[in-house]
Image (tube, rainbow, N blue to C red; front, side, top):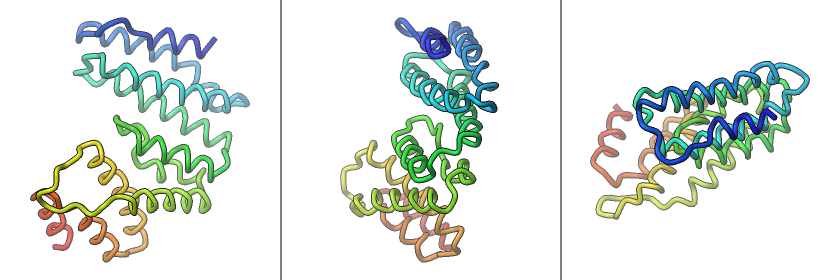
Length: 202
């Protein structure tokens, strides 16, 4: 019944304007409330799955909502926090957790799982963090270097930014300045990229 409650609360018909957005968000918030208790108890595994489902449902609706106040997008982080708490109880297989989180972070249009490798670091452990890095490096190596004059595919541009942030955090923790410079030098397709690289070197 909790899944049905989430589905019902997140269901929309047409566009939700500014005046209706707050009421919609409150309905979703109430549907998420029961998951807080589940996430800390013996049914944390169920809370984990329901939180993932809630994130998917909310993300599917946000383009059809005037979320000028940010109440609706805040629900994504609420569902993510429930997921994080439940993962701390369930302790999923760290390698599989890394794969699931990596896919969500890279495909995420709302930064719900941004910086997941650190947020979930305790659950990932060394094995999960290594897998996360392997996945990020493999995806990064598939991206070609970008120089001025090339047409910018803005969907792919997002991949450069997300993957660079992930790998940069690893390089920073290791004090590897050369690696951090190389990450920034891979995409020099706009003047801002040069400025950013120069500022980092400075």
